[in-house]
Length: 171
Image (cartoon, rainbow, N blue to C red; front, side, top):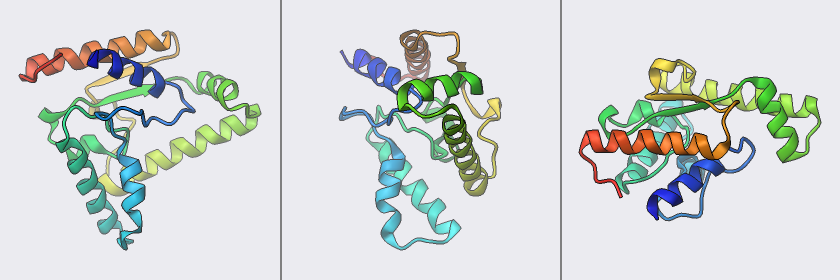
């Protein structure tokens, strides 16, 4: 049942306009905690980076979590997690945003450009890496030609394989 919950979460995560925070106790989205703690008075670049590290490390300590974004692959030890990059061509993403958010084509394109810029800038500013570099991830999956469920199944299969190889218990 746990694998099914994670698969369901991943399917929702693959929806480009849906929030990735699932109502599951073992799934966390670090940026929710990061945003909530952002008012703690740390306004410097270093303070923000340290806060991000603290939140991600604390979230990861819970075990069996999915951390969406925020440079977790640059914070956590490489052998303690699996970094997955989900991508699709811009035109496919525009279509998806059009369908799910009801935006005009130009607004959907602007939404995607803004989102991509913010993500890229965050990783470059705080971790001095290019998040789009495929070498920064353990798995890169293009979802354009996949059914959402199949993409989620592929990610779960890779995660389970990695967990077994790494000596973690798999349910």
